[in-house]
Length: 115
Image 1 (cartoon, rainbow, N blue to C red):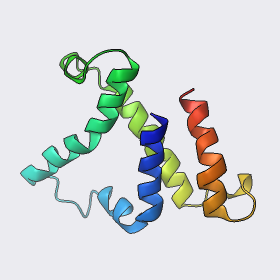
Image 2: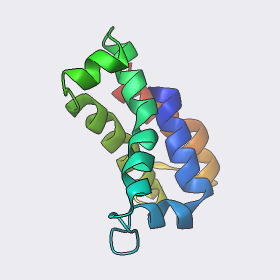
Image 3: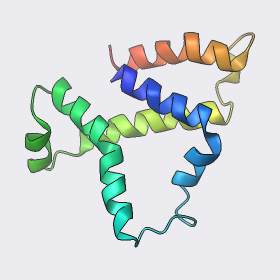
């Protein structure tokens, strides 16, 4: 979970314009049939990780419609990414913001969330 969330945050920091665009409902055509499939595929890594953490399979997790843990994990990663993009954690960092965040604070946050 930590590695997945770290990758999610890194993508946001490395591609801030694309990351922000992906979540602009006014700029994304959600009626396009490709949108729903693409959105589901984007969540699969979180779903697969949650299934492993819970000792089950992705199929069983989806069949049970137990989506809350998937959305909780995604929300956590997304929230961290958004806060980092908006420099909301600046007070907790010293020196180079980006480097200090990625190498020190982010791993601490993720370890606190997923021991």
